[in-house]
Image 1 (cartoon, one colour):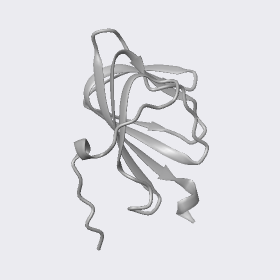
Image 2 (cartoon, one colour; image 1 turned 60 degrees about the vertical axis):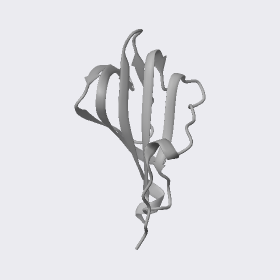
Image 3 (cartoon, helix red, strand yellow; image 1 turned 90 degrees about the vertical axis):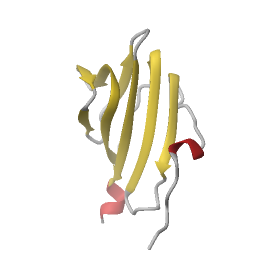
Image 4 (cartoon, helix red, strand yellow; image 1 turned 45 degrees about the vertical axis):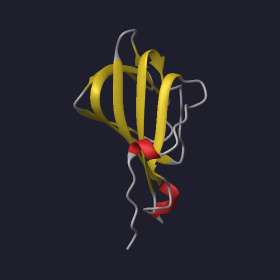
Length: 116
């Protein structure tokens, strides 16, 4: 049995390339549970997490607090806590947060290569 237990604040923070006013933490790194990574993201507005596209995994955002605008492919979707959003593999996406706003969410990556 794995004894992984950590406070989010004990995990090193980073920002994604191309992001603005974003703090990320990989709170359950890939490899602890096969095929899975769980992270925590906070964006203070004005900010965004950086336009991304991931060919090798599904991504799910569980929005815990705040609101923003999800860019998912050609869609622009207002998101507000509490909600959950799925980002299919190979889908361009970003989260935009307006000045004076904040969003906090947990992201879950399910890696396709680990499904076999």
